[in-house]
Length: 258
Image (cartoon, rainbow, N blue to C red):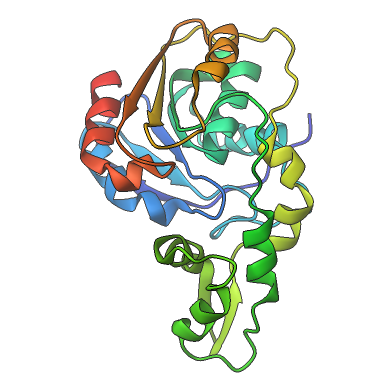
């Protein structure tokens, strides 16, 4: 297997011992999105919120399949001498976490998957990527100027605000800190899930879905059960970004499971 990339991260609960907890964000996200929850989880665990490849401060690469991203996480564990970790992953991070657990079950103590299933989806985020790539950043000095350029393609203000967290000002100029070219080129892989045959992860697993989201459905539960026979599925009110919309309910479920 190819060696994974060295990932950047935020840390919480440095003085807490025991098995560490890794937190993996979704597409367009970063470790910073999980800072508040990581601090809370850090009261009981040593927490590492990772920037996955092509996001945040992590290295860029032209490809970003789930097996590759799982290898990045495996390298993170190996580089620090961690035999195992508990893993929480949302959306793209959830699929990365599932892939890690299925390919290296001995390295995952327990698994939390937030609003995603091990299936292929039909909806794509390609329009968001196109809008971000089309934005004219030249000479812009205010975030609102870029926000206005995204408004037609992304009419929901909270979603635009989330996407704009990837916009950083360096040396007086804006740039995207997400590899939009790679994300766009790999979108078919990102909305899919790798064919891992009959691989099973038999460790404790919790799937948390949003009641207004269509990512975890009754139709996806057979695949969940096939790969994760000891999974429990819990639904709480909210949409796809359930951890941000309902942080208290989400945190209580995770803490009770861990």
